[in-house]
Amino acid sequence: MAVVLDLVNNPRPRHPEKAHRPDTPLAKKPDWIRVKAPVSAGYNATREIMRVNGLKTVCEEAGCPNIGECWEKKHATFLIMGDTCTRACAFCNVKTGRPEALDPNEPHHVAEATAKLGLAHIVVTSVDRDDLDDGGARHFAEVILAIRDKCPATTIEVLTPDFLRKENANALETLVRARPDVFNHNLETVPSLYLTVRPGARYFHSIRLLQQVKEIDPAMFTKSGIMAGLGETRNEVLQVMDDLRSANVDFLTIGQYLQPTRKHHEVKSFITPEEFKAYETVAYAKGFLMVSSSPLTRSSHHAGEDFARMKAARGAAQGK
Image (tube, rainbow, N blue to C red; front, side, top):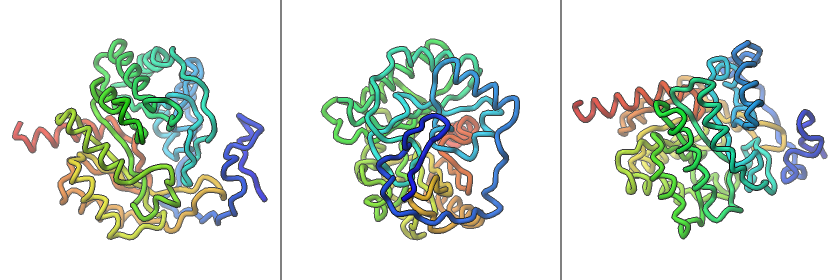
């Protein structure tokens, strides 16, 4: 039985909870999925800034295929609250286990790195922290406030966990009141696949979370995304679009799921660029202000440019 290892950073199994799962086949990627290896000077400069400030990025931890392109442009998605998640989603390459205590200096370090990179738009995400009484919402808020203080012109996008069972701690309101410019929470897949792909989450809780953001701050931009190729049907994807619009979500992302290892959920199909374009057309017709739908679409890919386009679309819709 094979064991999933991260031999570079940790000689122990990276995914011990997946070690005893049967191997799933690794499908050959089609030509439209291929990306260049990250070897540029810009990539190395961004990597050095992250290392000096002791920061993690979801770009590395989740094995994002766009890391070469984004880091060359000094774009990165900061992963706060550690690199160890309390959940074990079948699609995810982030480590699972018992996380360490929060670093009280992390907000300062993220703000410093934001300034050094000269970011006009920053994306901040995190692992799930079910061990914390508020799921880490206060820490998210502290990071936002530190960035605002150090880089007042930088727009801030957060990609959050679902804060499941954290209602009594007012976790969501704490974070929204810190005023990020974009609140992103991904559904990841269609409801019928949650028990196998995202067993620790609840689909309708996530929909409700996005709806509550708008109830707390109607002007805040909201965003969500799913992966295609996990075994969903087209009609199920269209239903997700309707559910998100019922929660007044502004921005939808759809990208191809890529299997990290044989121990993860297998790729059931590779969606063609034409099919992604068709999803985009339907999503705009359903009323989303912004849609990114392509094989290599990821939540934070081109986030700054997409945020500017979304603001412009809202302004046009309001006649400004």
